[in-house]
Image (cartoon, rainbow, N blue to C red; front, side, top):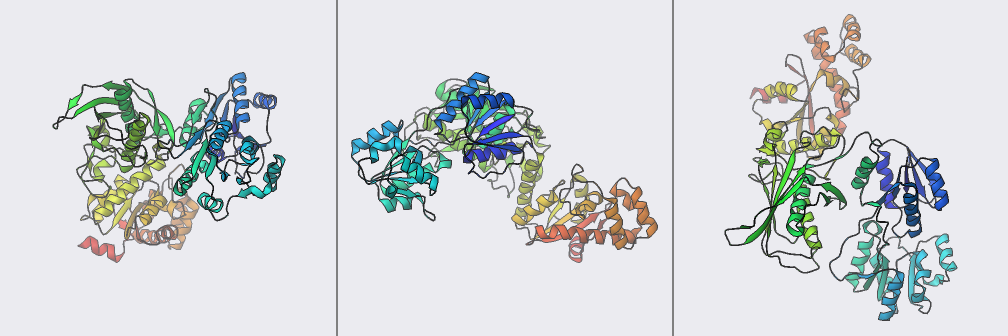
Length: 640
C-alpha cells in the first residue's frame, strides 16, 4: 500500500498519477480544506505524530511513502524521515521545481534568523512579508517595533485568529487580491523590501520575484529546508510515476518509457559530462519539456581526441550511447542504441550572468548522423534536406546543454557547439514505420513532445496520424483519404489513382481521434474508407473499433438490414455469421447497395459532429474492392 502526504498542488498531481493504476492508496492531509477527487484513493485527515504514523504504517502494510507536503512542513518531513529509517520504508519526496538563478535578483537567506539579520542591517521601514501566517512569530523582530511591516495571509477567520494569537495587529494584515497580482499588492503597500519563502514554481515564487524586480524592490527569499538525503527526490508527474513503477513494479499494469528525443538528449548529457567532468555518469539528470527533471541511464561514453576545424578552432569531442527504453509500449525502436557525438569549443567565454536557460544563448548546431532520417517533403515543420529531429527534441537538447553549462559557470561560447545524433540500425527499423510515407528517408525520426512514452500505443499512434495528416495537407491534395490500413488503402487508392501517396492516412482503429485531428488541421474535404467489420461498429457509435473495445452487434445489424429492405429470410441469417464480412455473401447486389446506404447514414450521425468545419464523405469497401456510397463528386474525380 502507498501512503501520500499532500494538501498541496503536488499532492493533487500525485493523486492524478496514482489514480491511473486503479488501485487503492491512502491520501493524507492535516486539514480537510483541500478539495481533491479520489476514486481509488482513501482520504485521511488530521496530523500524525511518530507513534501514530508508525502504527498506521504497520497496520496497513505501507510499502512506500510519497511526501508531497509543503516544502516548509519541517516537522512532518522529520517525522516521515524517522519512520522511514525505523520501518525501512522508502520515501519518494515529490519536490517542487525550484528554478536556479545566476543573477542578483534574489537575496537568499538561510533560515528566518538569517533573514532577520540581513533586513535589520539594511534598516528598512516598509516591509511586506509574503511568507504566510505561520511565520509571523518567526519574524517578530521585524515587526514588533515597526508599524509599517505587513503580512499577507489567507482571508479566513482561522488565519486571522492565528495572527492574533502571535500578537500581530490585524490592522497590518493584508490578503490576496481577488482580481489582482503580487505586483498590484506591492504597488498598494509600496514596500522597500519583500520577503518570500522559496516556494518553487507551483508556489508562485517566480511571479513574486519578477514583480519585485520590475518595481525595484529588494527581494529576500528564505531557502527551503534541507531534506533527509535518503529521500528519493522527484519534481514532476513523470518522475513520480516512473519512481513508483521502479519501487513497486506491480502497482501499475504497464510501465512508461522514454521517447527517442529523451534518449538522444540523455546521450548528449553523457557526452557533456565526459568532456567537462571527465567521467562517465550512468544516471544523468534530464530536464523534460515540462521543466521537471528525471533520471535517465547512459550505457557508455567515450572521450575522443580533440579536433581542429577549418578555421583553426580546437574542439573537445566525446560520444555517448543510450539504449532506448520504451516501457510496455509496443514500440519497434525499443532497445536500439541512440548515440550522440558532441563537439564543444575548447575555449569557453562566460557570458552575462542574467541570461536565462530558456533563451539558450549558446549557438548549438544539431545534425543527423547514420540511422537518423532525412526530410524530403513539406508538412513536418522541418527543413527539407535536414535531419528528422523534431522541434521538441531539438529544444530539449538545447535547454539541457544550456542548463548543464550554466551549472559549470559557463554562459556563452564564441563558437558553435555541434551535436550529431545517430541511431544504430535506424535504417532497417525505419522501414517498419510510417517514415517512408512521410518523406523521411534513410532512418528513423527523433521525436517526442513530452519526453515520456505513456504505456499505451494510442498516444504514439495518434501522433503518427497527426504527422501523416500534416504531410497530406502539404501535398495540396484536394482530399485527405483516411483508411484503416494497407488492405483498405489498396482499394481506395484504386478509386483515387491520381492522388499522391501521402494523401492516404491510416487511422487503424482510432476513427474518432483521426476525425478530430482532421478538424484541428482544417482539412477541407476528408474521405473515409471503411471496411464492413469496422463500419458496423462505427454505425452503432463506437469511434474506437478495436476488437478489445467492442464486438459486432448482430441485433443492430439486423435492424439496419430491415430498414434497408433486406428480405426477412436473409435478416435471420445474420444471426449465424461470425464475421461482418460474411454479410457480403448474404446480400445480393441491390441489397448490399441499400444496406451500405443505411450504414453510411448511421456512421454520419456519429462522425459529422467531430468535423463541423470539414466536408466528410464515407465510403464502404467491399470484399472484392468495390466501393459503395461514393457521391457524384467523388465519382467525377475518379473519372478524370
